[in-house]
Image 1: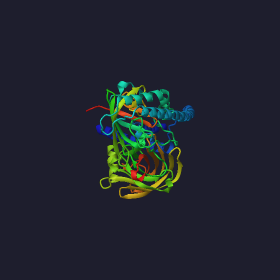
Image 2: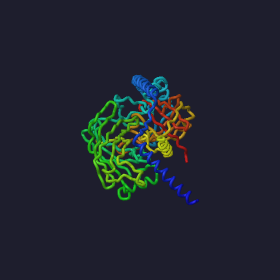
Image 3: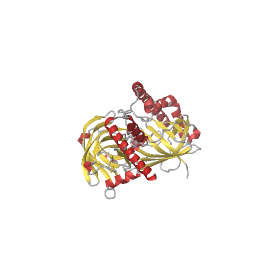
Image 4: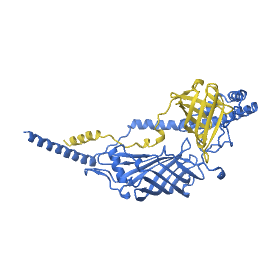
Length: 343
Length: 137
């Protein structure tokens, strides 16, 4: 009796699995699930976008006006402060020579002339919200006088980010990521690598003139969140012998440049190096300069594992990763300052 | 009858957590929780601070800022300038506070705000800087 029950149980398990696979196959062929907001929500979002656009337009106008007012007030305050005191704060460890009278005069002058309203207008303008920092006026920012004293009291170099001209950029590994989205018969998943390093040289205003450089990351940094899957992936990448994944750009074509908005789009072409293989790779990219004066580069494109000589991973013959991945990048770079003798 | 296996399939799939990273989460710079800022008072200022975020024109020329504000009204600060090669500038002086404006010596005033964790935000026409409070260890 017990033996019979075991057999029946085993058969039931096999039938259950077969039924599940059958249903799986049929569902995959016939069903498509998509998630989208309700129609009313889309309409609401559209109205909100229009309203946001109008507010942003007003904010830009207001910001330009406020900045002009504030600059006048600050110049007046500095002039009065300079007249009231010849003393200045000590620098680089000198003895304390800044008298209270001098600082009081500076403070009073600033308080008297740079009214709360003017300063608030300058620093609180809606355009100065996070994501659009105070002082950001796209495309129309005057460069300050050399050695201008900032509100931080330091005399800072007067340069600002420039979009035009050949520049060298250095990736910021703490913020730069590459990754992929993969499909499998079980469920889709992503892989991600942080700590992406590299440098490149390009004229953002004329990117078609050429780009050169290199971007890479540690192969072992690529992870999917599942230890077993990561171990298999690292084995396929042969990270013991090939510890870096890299890309060497050779051209940026089909570009659309908006110098006023400090942004561009185009297709980055180059060579992708994985394991002992290299393959040509084209990546449509968008780049813009953010409020922290970093160049932000985003892009994604399909990538065939077969082109890299990698057989798509498979488990038990029916859980299989698709050959085509979506490779994506989200990179941050800073322009390198030029040495003094090259400026 | 036909819907039964499909329902079983959907149930089974629901047990597998999705692990695709949404495209809006690819940006590593937006992974931190935004702070809520309030106007600062003079008592909020004393302490030691290190820059966490720089924006505006400041961000082009500065890599790092360190300030120490003392209760007596003096301060000292160091700025790591993004030159080739990078270099520090160090200064000392006096601060005064006329809410919401902080004035360092004879420099133009800056708007001062504070967050719940003690971080400061200084804003002026050249940009803004978020300074995280550093406790002495």
